[in-house]
Length: 110
Image (cartoon, rainbow, N blue to C red):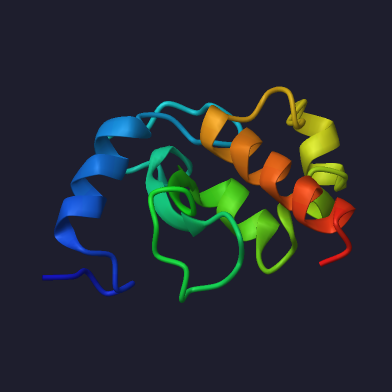
């Protein structure tokens, strides 16, 4: 069984257990009416076909909307991130790992 983003139920449970706050800004997710406090599904690498525990995360709606289709490394240089103190050092370990993998991949010229 999968959700509407094609994320299997077992992976959805695992990610929800892991990501209690936005993987980018650290906002604690709440079960309330405030849209900014709700979680949204994020593909760290913007490829919906990569449905793995390393690429699927939860972030706040604001970060997700701001990142859009940008790569994580490009988005971290945006005014949105700079204004909120979001950096490669402040993001959650799952996002740091994605950045490290991206750097290794591009260092090899792949």
